[in-house]
Image (cartoon, helix red, strand yellow):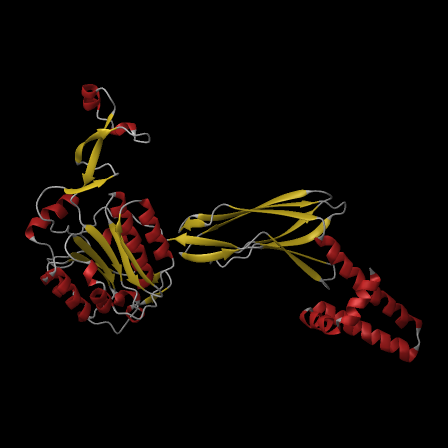
Length: 436
């Protein structure tokens, strides 16, 4: 083994020099060793020779010490999940077990991650064939995509000359979804559906509109059995349903970079994401058809559909959304206006005070689309060059308009407290009064 060390030093002097430059302690020892060797050769005094022997023996001893501490160590890494929501905890559990007869001193354990607020680092000493458990829990503070791992375990010698780091586990991707809020007072106008009957389209969801019966098939839920028809026909019959006469909900989040204001959590970008997630949560709980339209760093177009899977896809898109788009809201409405016709309700979330998108919305209203607007007051987020919000124009167009300001309660502002102007028609006012 000493021969291998000498061979490594002779073959890689540049690597040793680089290691010495990066490690102050090792650099000092090498300088002292060189000085003692020079003095021993010049003076011939025995004390310098012995000093050279001691320092020269210390270097390989520390080298093998650090390698020995890293051997015989088994580490099991367990992470709870790779899909979390803001407010939940990302948990990592480690089990370290030593198979060595000697005690392992000063094992530095670190679980690196890109998640903000995560500082998982400790020092552990393992006895002879002992084991230790270590648990780290970090609260997710911000939505986004982060990485965690692999776990770094670093060993060294008592003099700090050599350090050796080994990696355990794999690098894991973690997706932190935005946390929706309850919106008990939020209201958006329904589409002007023709007639008062149901939409004659079969669905596998349970709705208030039972359209008929059919024979029972394996897998049908027992709560759908129509017992009167079963008793009359002598075989199991189940009810069939048709869809409710409800409009498609389009959530449109303005991610145009030039229109944004604020920083970090107190920014129009974060408020827009939180509001979009909360609106999606509200309508998904009512089994409504919801879709998402936004263009930030990437363009997202999700056609309206029902179910928890659609809601999950919307949260995933909102988790990675960035307000770095180059397309203004007016152009986005013009490009995707064909999707927003009759039987649809558009809910627009924007901090923009540009009149162009209001004109584009007016054209959509003429096509039969209904709309509600959530205006983010950019001035309350710290932006100075803000014009007048087009709330009066929207009210004149009978568009329900909510105004949300920085550091405000979203659940309250998306309700009667946040509505500005007389933007509701007379038949719609009782509905809002009932909600209050």
